[in-house]
Image (cartoon, rainbow, N blue to C red; front, side):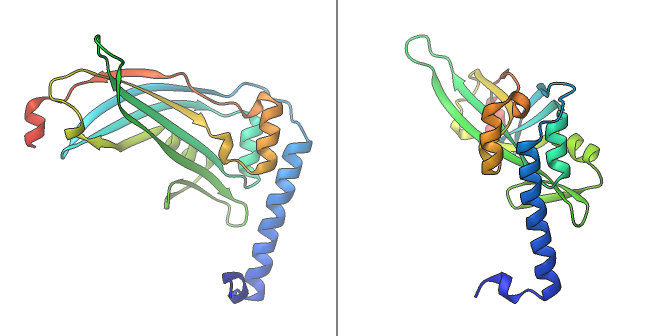
Length: 206
């Protein structure tokens, strides 16, 4: 028996209203094309690699500006997914460059139209936010992102990395994915931001 069957009548009505609101929001966003007063922009402003207890962690700051289409979607209850990509490699003059790390982190910004609650989540871990402004500010800071154990890197060797952030249109609801292909209002991708680092020998003993 499904979880829906165990809900009370009141809970079922609330769930149905939320589902209907989501469907209507998707239809409105796909049919009605609002004027986009400014383009969405994304930049990586700061990258700080750190070794913490045998692990390479990354602190990253972003500058994000969403356009009206994206904000309207959020306010109608449509979740937006932001993916942070990182690549780390080692340059080798005698052969192809060696890629050591290639991974991503997906963060989700949502607004519940029933409870009027904003939320920023990564996986199953979510943090409630008081407002859109607070949620966007939190989205622009990424702290202690675990990248890889340091034994994956040779000591005292320079590694080159790059980071970017993007609105992940593949995570959008299907109607919005189709809409995203037809116009640029859903495009938000930063340029790759480079950084370099090396793991010192003594850090392996911490």
